[in-house]
Image (cartoon, rainbow, N blue to C red; front, side, top):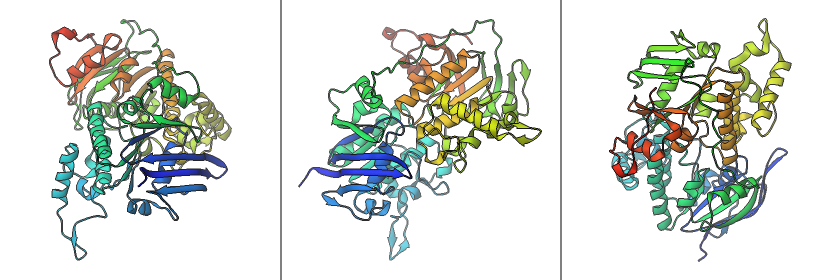
Length: 509
């Protein structure tokens, strides 16, 4: 019996006049973790969706366990033993965790539901170690927990091929390692895991083989042994790799008055007596684990969630906060979930960017289309958004280009304070590098930046100062220029640091 589970030969795919996959020849073996990497728009997610039955292909053949497929659909793929975990989660918010996991495969007797999902779920969750509760509604879960539900749903179907599209994008380092343990278990059980990701460290630590894609073509496929982060990036970009973070501009002097001052901020969403400040030209990071209250703090500052306490902008007290009033005061907020909280996917690029800033592109209440097009085109050029059409359909853009549209939307009006919640989540190395440059550009231009990222290296490397958060409270302020990732982890997990490693470097607020 062949050790191949999936073989693609001459696969091509187009959307209208845009060809996104070119003559793809590739195979996936039983009992391997095979990573697909490349920039946003390289075609890796589209290739995964063809294997999973969500996209048809225009030319070529797809063979599953040695047999060429004819009519292909998600149902046909699942029947053949192929399950796909999407980057944008496919869950029913009104149903419980267990109901979502076993949806379509409920226990029944004679066609009548007989229950028992809770017990089945408990065994499955213990096997994976995720610690989810069977009866919790999906609507009440954070993104990280919803991602785990998607993973459990695929495993519950006993799929022999599991396609994971950015499965760790919403997970902490500890949660990602637990997932990688599950992936290794699936591999050792003889299953194929197709792992689409932008996290190159995860590829190097978990994959057996890797395929690099660029511009809808396969650049190369080979064993992961001997690869480095630099070699992978160079193959993805087609140029020598530079994976370093950009240098920060000088921190503002201590006597510079803060642009944002918060005192005693408390909310029903779990914030307790938050006090912090951010000065013009300064990047301040909120450093914490998932559930620490970082996103809740961002929403409270912007007025998306109610909170008590004092907020001052440029020395003036800001009461009765709301998103509309925040925009008027020069605040911008890039939320963590671009599809549900950040973009209107039924609108094109142009209204997505201009909607919060109609006063800038109108006169006496009448829209000026020429000015709107000019500003939109300027943002497209600045962020190198692909495709570069001012009326492009955002719903069909890659994740990285959707994120660039979202960033453009909030810098359209030259804000004084920019709150960034997971600005580089789910984007490729090229888009990530552009976003990092953009964050530094904001500070260099005099804006105050409040940065949130679950990647501790990212938030520490891109911040002048930081606030460590745990359970809705700020536990310390730190100088990020002398803070190490290990230092931060010891504090966040509330673990005494061995004396031989050295003390945590702190800085007063």
